[in-house]
Picture 1 (cartoon, one colour):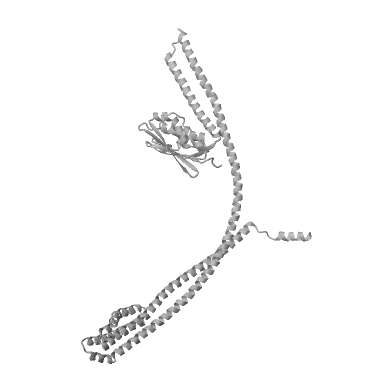
Picture 2 (tube, one colour):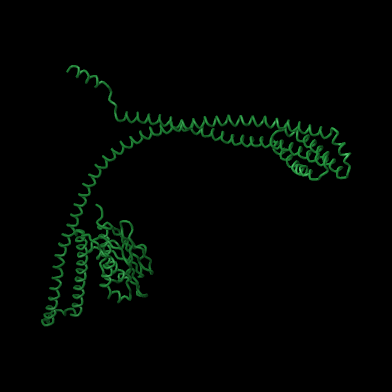
Length: 509
């Protein structure tokens, strides 16, 4: 027991590692790993650069090797051609048969190009270039000697030709040619061996560099995996913290959403109660207006039969009657307007409380049915309604009926009397939504009014059609509750297109 307390006391004296200290240590380790990784990466880049240089150098050395081989081969070919020419000359000299001149002519045709090739290939070697004039001179001397003897034989002077051949000039020239070619070939072989050694040495370095690159790649990959594993662990920790925060946030959002829904229901109930309370006095006002109308009739009868001759003359009955009628008409118009507005508020309040019932809807049949009910209005406005095949929809039937009935009714109501009306309904399914367009060629809407038309009790353009300005506000509310949206594009004098996006099925909460 005493030992336990001592251990606990000693443990309590050990400073605890705080989360901040752990984070600083982790950051220092990550920085150290990053420095090592960058150093290894820099070294790998250096190795790749050196390897690239070695590859380039080997290509250059390989080209020089090929040139050295071509020089040696061209010198050997030149000597062989001169020997062939001399052989052909000797055969013709001894036999007199021109057939033996074939090797001579074949060789002499190739000697000049071969000499030119040797001169071109040795441009990078001053020692070999210094021997080219001497080689050309002695080759020309040998060819002149061969051509001279052949010409003498052709003239019939065989004895003179034999005398020239028997002399030492041809042999000396040929020996000199062999010496020059041997000296140049020796220089070519020396350079060939040097270049071959350089090529081999560079190959060894290249192999070493590639092996080092492989080792560095393994090191970089290992360090990268270690860093990635550390980073993934940090991400996992951050993700866990974020998940915990999200769960807390989602709970708060659910609570807040419930509060908002409750407040919204209270507002709807308030609008509903207020609307009903307002209707009661309006009914009384309208009833008393009717009473006033009855009293006015009785007053007219009494006023016309009981006139006191001693009293001042009353106003003309016609003026009194006109003022009375004007007042009554004003009261009726005001109460009627207020009643319409209250009915509109009630309509909105009721639509917010109704529960949707989702089902498969044949949109083409539904819109055609609505168009049939509006057939007389369309005929009166000289308009046609064209319904293209529409995609089906999973939605609330009553809401969809109200939306498209209102849009088609508005399209007919605001047609341009100056031209035949045309209303087109089309639709297109896209992802989880279906888009419907109701297009008309009516009077159009000014761009400044495109947003106002969706506000409650707001109307655009000339107020020459009946309505309270509630239709578009009502269907926008319905569309929003369904999880969709509505938009409008219009141009004055050309027409209007209302676009409605409705989701397939009940929207996600």
